Length: 327
Ligand code: AVJ
Image (tube, rainbow, N blue to C red; front, side, top):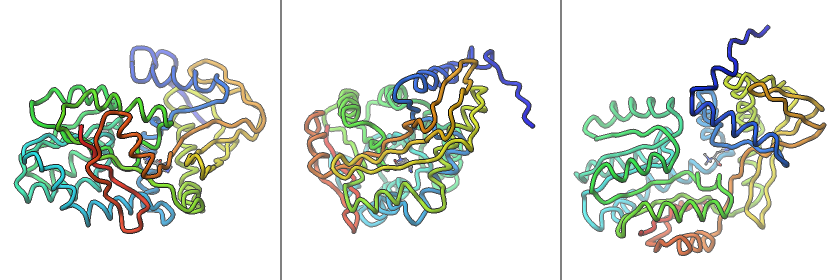
């Protein structure tokens, strides 16, 4: 038995919720149907993603952790080549497990920096703020809750110091190739010559390894995708029957595109913020792209968006790279 008190009035007057509603309805009325993976991260979504990072199949976090644990010195050298005073801005910081290794190392070097995590999840930011306060009481932290560039424009103006931007975890993979190019180009325009970007790319590798990472046996990735439907039910007063949707994952080893879908097993009409949305039997909703790159493709992206690459720092398996780019 469910009892709903949310209605259209709750959406009106809350800009973030209004945007969410608009994006969802537009995405579900289009052909093909799409939802934006940035909306995965409500409280339950954050918890599911943390579970994903601990799954045996999900190598990405382990690989980048390997880099941040074992190549901290290389990273710090590149960051501090132009001096020990800067602002460290992290886009999509999440729980900052990887960057914490760098923060710790920079503190031991007595670098003069403020850490500015940016994230769309208020939930994860307050968790992070607490964690950093406990682990590094001497660290200056200013968190920004919101979309990448809205918050970056605030962060870059907050001081005249040189900027170092972290964009880790292959978050760039959530963008189509053209979007990634536009993103890097815009990022470059926010920066000054001498600023540095550290960008994490998941590299093309054995296709089965990649597919398994997004198609785990325990069904956590499926739950992560389905959770967005539950979020839409709760926040946009919708009536998805979650059991009617099945997670379907693909990987195209030529394109490097790993895509997730939810497939509607039934013909149905779902109501979202009072608007009807029609599903045919077996109709897919495109949920998320996790794009994989070759080193050559990373380098092309750097050059086309106005960066010069300083280094590509690799994990021990060469499955992942943190690109270090100079603006
Ligand atoms: C957080 C975007 C890096 O694409 O690998 C993990 C999200 N989705 N499993 C990724 C995700 C399914 C993840 N990123």
